Length: 323
Image (cartoon, rainbow, N blue to C red; front, top):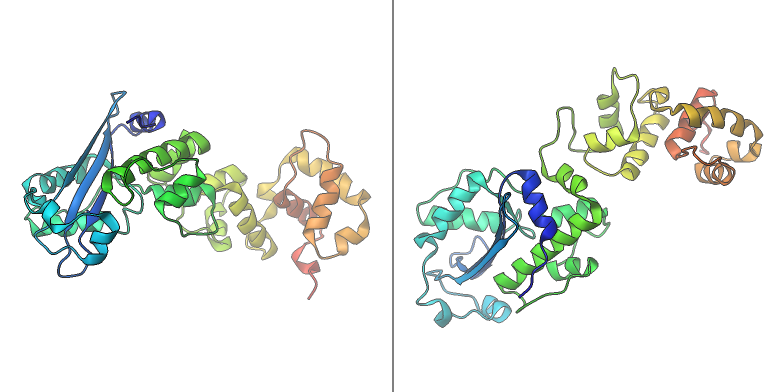
């Protein structure tokens, strides 16, 4: 079976560590007395190789498989009765990978990683922490800026033109689907965008994007750009622009530190010539659209620059909004 993962290989090389994409099938929900792993599958790529390796094995959970799980996965008690236990090798394998390998999968932060820790504890191979982790689901949500936070692996994969290969709700098929979805995500959004969301944030980066957080970040700075803010908050410029607009309107920041000289020079003249009703109408969008229609090529106009220009001319936008 052919699997598309060329971009995943390049990602491993950039990260400098192996990437292990894995998936589990289980007896029931975590926290139930009969919880156990019935199947494990994984796909591994190395930072210095141009190939990958896939595996899939049934596991004897030493627990009863719920009817719901049997119906969903097709894995029955008789299928796993003579299979190896999690503690035979996978407990040790995953404890080792917890310290030296990038572990990933779809929604693993919510379920799979916790399941591994549960089973490793049961079989005497406790894991304190997984040092290198990223979730393909989180990558998708972050990079796509999807408003709908829900979606199964199959549904998300379909958004990238990836279709399942193999039996549904079986670990191997889910791993292949995750690998190919990750490969498409890297191809679509670019390697650097993916790395920015996987690697630890740089000093001064913030977890939550708010107008107040922006004000804290830019304090004592004399010049800041949208790309710098987007990198600091590990998000896209559109989201940053919205919150920065709030920060300017609420007078939390000095607008002039965001000024782009060429744009501001043009706006100083354009705002004088534009229809005055647009300036005093209390709505920023019509004013922006009118200015954008006559904007010279090469001038970078956005809502932030428009707010900066209004402020520099003593026409503070927030003070003119209708009440």
